[in-house]
Image (cartoon, rainbow, N blue to C red; front, side, top):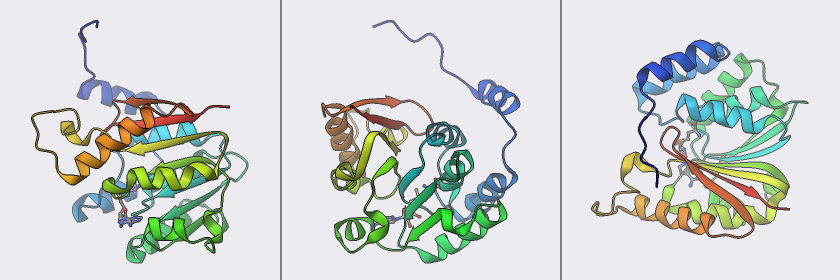
Length: 219
Ligand SMILES: C[S@@+](CC[C@H](N)C(=O)[O-])C[C@H]1O[C@@H](n2cnc3c(N)ncnc32)[C@H](O)[C@@H]1O
């Protein structure tokens, strides 16, 4: 394998911030609100990636809302007023998320929140919001449950859909065989192996933020 002779550094990130479209002020507000409270939100580069992927994907499902940062990246990028269903049992977080989405001018009907644990909601055939089909699924909740989110969502994906998942490198723990794997790391290793070995998908891990796996459904 060709050795890597360059890894992007802080100057590259500053350059990207300079040349990309200015960050939406409400995305800035969420970053400022989340940081002191220790609310884990996707890296800004992951937000940009999600926005790019959301462009022509009118029906999106997200597992793990928090303050709605990743949700807003996708909602701002969707064309033709697409919709997003986002799942998070923590209503105090999603109520704040709704305030941010409104401040950004996103109409309430475009984002539907399901305040339930994702596996419970996905197993409930009466949960109308999660019936699908979806053009993009984004996973960012409990790492030990990623494989189960995936299995539950596959039948609800539209032809040509993409599934993305955050934290698939977990700060280097996933890649390091000398690390005694905690359950989340084990869960992510199993998820990565499952997705990369699934012939129905064309999947790859991008070293963006904390690692993002993107899997495109063939056909
Ligand atoms: C990493 S944060 C999501 C961050 C968000 N995607 C962003 O980038 O702005 C994970 C969220 O998963 C939520 N969560 C915890 N248990 C969950 C479950 N069983 N189902 C769905 N979400 C859950 C937490 O409340 C938390 O807000």
